[in-house]
Image (cartoon, rainbow, N blue to C red; front, side, top):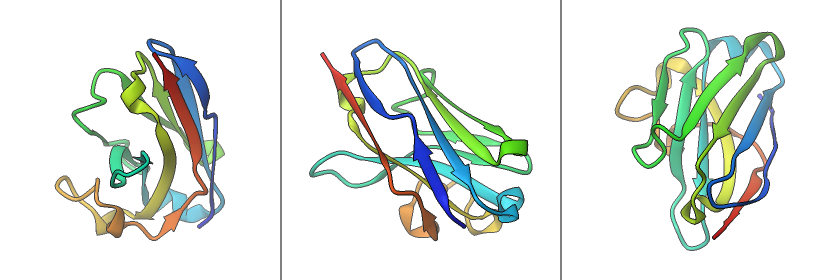
Length: 127
């Protein structure tokens, strides 16, 4: 599975961005697609995940109420709508995918569970 992210950029605090993650194959239908981010000197962290078949979503506590993950299954694309951005949201954002049964409620946020990654898109939030 190939993933291609887009939509990153630079915004001021309080602003919004929407990231896109386009998948290349029909394995999309049986997957979880998750957005991760990694800031310089920090570990990669799960931000939001979505089971594509059921639509079930997961969020990190740090983004609940501000970020929304959604999909357009016909386009095999998952979106991350980011509102009320903070400077601490500055990071490289990656989308990743794996077969749906490889992760669960307690493990969706673990990078080691995922076997396909996009190239990343930079998000910079200035104060």
